[in-house]
Amino acid sequence: MLIINLSEVCGRLALEGAAFVGDSPEELSAFMKTQIAKWDKVVKQSGAKVE
Amino acid sequence: MRNTLSSALCGGLIAASAVCTAQEYPVRTIRMIVPFAPGGSTDVFARMVGQQIGEKLGQQVMIDNRAGAGGNIGAALAAKASPDGYTVFFAGAPFVINPALYGAKLPYSPTQDFSPISLMAKAPQVLTVHPSVPAQT
Image (tube, rainbow over all chains, first blue to last red; front, side, top):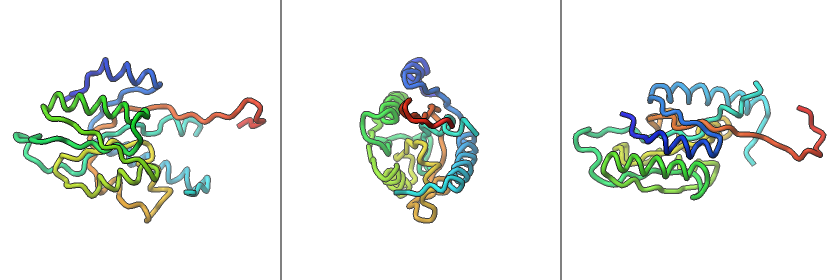
């Protein structure tokens, strides 16, 4: 069930240079896993620390 | 990878695991925790989404701004909320970056304490310096 008014949301997002996605729970779950792994690598390689 | 930053998660709608009966839901106000201060781009977007969800479901969606600690304060609060579908969390990029930065000190697990709903948007994140800085890469 898509409950988002796309024209309003997309118009607002465009002002920020962003794009609407609106994917499924399964897709977001998979995306989060790849992002967590990616940023883990980035943080390790850069040696970034929380100040 | 040059475009690493450009594909960062902007706004994902996340709920504490929803265990509720579809016929009755929602019977009261839904709280949407936004881990950023009011007025920022994530907050503005969350409010727009919250309003539309509220109109569709016939219940008010209350935005609860809980800024601080790179989004960890809001996320920790959402993680401890009752898994009844009445607390949703509007995550930003730190939600998937903080596990690497905080490790075991992170007061929640983004994968175990939350049920993903939908990735709402992607936004570019850019890094810039003053033109006088001689950096080339």
